[in-house]
Length: 546
Image (tube, rainbow, N blue to C red):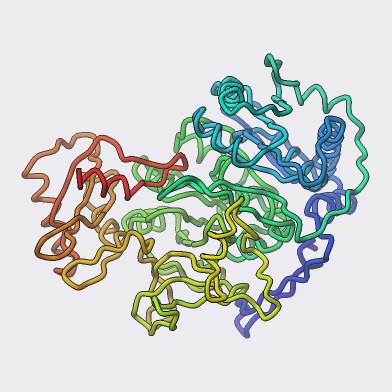
């Protein structure tokens, strides 16, 4: 029996669909002790993590292994003075030590700060200064230790430094240190309301914000794992994400282990569709989750048979209808889209038991009370665009939603204005109860008296064979207020030209309502992006103004 049953209550309708999900979170809930160690004690040989890399190295870790190694790492941290509430940054790519370190920090009651190895020195300086961290655990690869030392010097900050699997000047070799550490670790008292982890948002419109989640956060990911990704007891779930991003928490540890699924980890640098599908088939992956970019590559390169794969899901960016259709035709699996934020867990999705509808975010998670509201705070009718807001339960505490922004109480109060959490995302609901993403409110285009979400135009653009990547923005227009502009990266074999520009406009505008017509096209070699790969539409708008 999966351990999540101890903390969650599910209610189903007559057809077996989940209609209600409630969490009974103990005051002292701690994922390290109450999930990892609990499974290790009852089923020590149960598989927790299957890991491989591009050098053909592989490891299979049981829950007993995770308990042992996290205890050893916790003892190393404790001996260095890391205590409850201290902030520790992890820059570990997809190395298996991330799972030891994460659980070790949870057991200590320390605050984990995952970060990507792609950060620049300036990125690290900002995060070091903002977080006031006490220690860093990092990879030896990609010059991360050198960047961290430069950042610490520039910020004039000192911190305890560990590196895994290597001896680096100024860093203690954590791999060696933990081998000498005790395998037992006494429980540290923590509260479910204590801060557990902090993610820095990608900063699409300003400096990244530190998003803090408490110790209850993992339990809200049961819905993510079981009813969207369809990770299963005894299965093997594979989410393509680096550990520096919140998607790792969504798909590589919490919900999956709670529902009894092992986690597949492929440690790679350069994405190769063939290698990815080889991993899926070799290890017998049963459920898979990746951003639309991965599915685009799979479709373009040709998808092999994947006989063990039972379910596929996607989130994070626009999914072109062509990719949805071709993947389904080739595999027989429908791509199930989902929606949420770094500040939350899964809010909407094409859930288990319901046939996904191409392009739709599906329905609201039964764990949240979500409404669409207009600018005056009134619910919007079916078919009209509104902001996605979360209405908290009567108790006032909404598990699964972040508990604060780092040193920014004003911003936290702003997003919680009016007693509800404002996501800043626009959507509409159709007559069948399905929700459709319309974009960030900042990105909504107001043209000729109409409101246009960039995603609906981008979906059509991506159907043109010449378009590899695109972003749609609104730009000043004397006649319409704003005109719709498409910024496009072309595929190999295509060159920018007036003829191609006209062809793309005609192709798209035949499929779009007149008020959504593309008026301007700009071909570019690359897009301005955040470190997480999200296109900075504000930069595109600013560059047009210049």
